[in-house]
Image 1 (cartoon, helix red, strand yellow):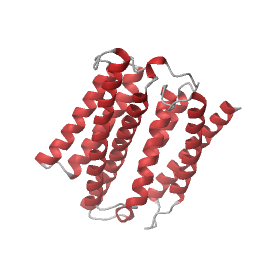
Image 2 (image 1 turned 135 degrees about the horizontal axis):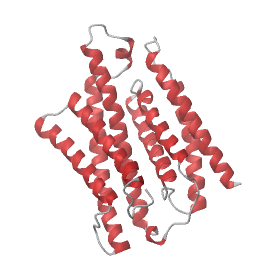
Image 3 (image 1 turned 180 degrees about the vertical axis):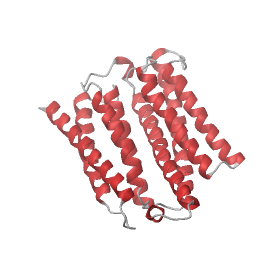
Image 4 (image 1 turned 90 degrees about the vertical axis):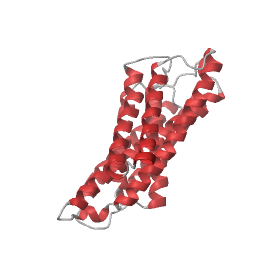
Amino acid sequence: MQIETNVLLFELALTFYFIATISGIIEIFRGEKNTSKVTLYLSMAGFAFHTANIAIRYVEGGHIPVTNMHEATSFFSWCVLILFFVHEFKYKLGLLSSFIMPIVFLLMFSASIFPREIKALSPVLQSYWFGIHVVFAFLGDASFAMACGIGIMYLIQERNVKSKHLSMLFQKLPSLQTLDEINYHLVTLGFPLLTLSMITGVIWANSAWGTYWRWDPKEVWSLITWLVYALVLHLRLTSGWRGKKAAILSIIGFAIVIFAFFGVSIILKGRHVFM
């Protein structure tokens, strides 16, 4: 019965995220200046079902549900939503949900494709470092997902600013300065989280396998991701790469995050079989 409830909760969350995504897309093309809160409410309903789904898997499995691709992808989207709600209520950014919910839905849809069985935690993962490592990693990736969405918003708004005929969309989106500042904030949030995930990861690896670094594909691509975002911050602070360049780098950086998450896990299999 728990498994049936768990599946139902996931499907309800996926359904609400899909409706929220469609609502968000429609919101972009609505002629009214003020954005409605329908997409936000739909997202919150989906998040409630999603949280219950994760809670049930946690109780039944006895560990953070990130030990297979279904759980990891679902947890990834859940972390994106947490950061989305924080920034939505803090900054009240117009149309933010229209650009973030498609990312959330695509992640959840991807999760629905993978097997959903709940398995016992393997001995190598039975360490308190495991939970610390994955929380840092997923929150870091979620920050980069948010930065990607903000980056897309920036590019659209910049095009609106350069246009001789300002559309209603221009009035709905935040200013370029606001978007650039939040983009920078998200990257500076995600980078230390990624750094902490790598530090705790090597500590965990040493306790589990007796070595800090094994050149596992996931480790290598985590390092590549870290170097890319280190470069993003370096170029911004030393070469003044702000605005459009920063937005483009945020989108490229998240594309690398997605490859490291899905591509490496599916194609370049290593010891990180849980992610």
